[in-house]
Length: 333
Image (spheres, helix red, strand yellow):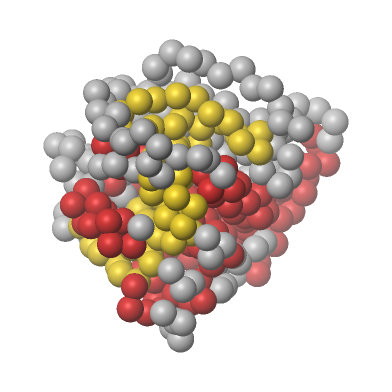
């Protein structure tokens, strides 16, 4: 049975509500029995009784629907789609008794549950459903697209491979049995110490401004999550972060194995200056190796864009290639 969630009805997004869409809160339940909360955006110009193409949006990893996934969803609703942005299991306004944990199986299921929900709406054409995954949820979107042929088109924006970064560290700097085993020992010690107790948090982004000697991408995260540009009270990245043990499932899994079997369309976009570009390039190369349908796959690089520029368009608001995204979904949905 669906859990009754207490959802705020106030507009509390980091972006303004468009006058071209109607907005409402909705919920749906995944196969693990977790009730997820979502913001639904529907074009005001939609014809009564017409079934619309639909999109489910999520990400970044540790963000909430009031941040950039909601921006993507609202923008696509302006273009005529029915779109939802949802909070993943155990985060934001969504259910799950344990908070601030994640795993590749549950998160992939979250996307497929969103497709369940959209496919059963009277105002949605179930043959025209796509997904949008941002940052860590870009990799999860690819995983879901490989598992679920109902997903007719997948947009992957500024993606992370969460299993790779958790298992190998940034830029694969910790890709050794020795370093992984040391990390496993540390996590195991925390699990023992916290058994039956409140779980400690790993910490979100550094306060703004980040120290001068911090890597540029750390400064970029701080500038988004810790300022009015992207701060939200329910966002893990804006506040205390995941639990220390909460994402360990990603470290010991490799979850993009069958992406070359995706038959439906995929567009991957990444910034030329993004620290995460290697995740996208390598994931695309794997998807294309002996691909069952290479003709509807594309990797598109946005000149001059950093990782966080594709969250909200960057300083000038012009870094998200909306025309490219709109053309992709118009062709494939």
